[in-house]
Length: 261
Image (cartoon, rainbow, N blue to C red; front, top):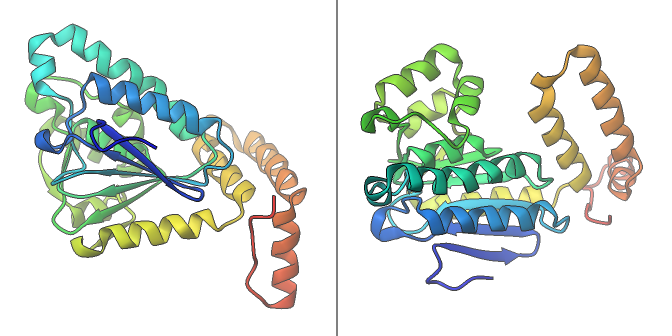
């Protein structure tokens, strides 16, 4: 879907869309071109019901080592707006799209890279991955939704510690804090990421989309509002062929074959 010289390489395997940050010479630091390309693909995927899973990864030695400091040094305010604007338009699209988003993390996951990883629905990390929010180390405040995601995942007190101290922590600590789902051997990261993506892609699309939406919007409602949202979501699922297949398979004690929508 895109050539190997692009800052963002997009490829597809059936319903699995793979998006790879491709500036390995600078550890995939986020620049203007990458931010714009990321927004463009998020807009496309948000409207694409055939996309079942989105996988984010990084080329070379890192997932993403934050924003491009060369651009920010040359034009602090202009570059900051050019980076933040597209990314902040893209993040709500990631959150609301039907497809679950999987982050495949290795090397450095810093600054905007960590912010983006926190915004994904799943995160797998290779052993040896290093994490840091890092903004405080350059005298900046966080962006790309870190201040929304981090307190929800790690709790307020730990989120403040991570943000204000800017320390580096490892993959085991990231898993302990609930920032990643799994830590895997580095040699197995791609295979295990794809195995998870395929499992999600083969699942019941409406069920997955509805539960992603319910979980992500639950803190916006009181209990009664959430119960009403659950009722509506279940009824939407009950009208699908996947629901009929799932019930039939359960009764027949066989594995369901989803994807008949």
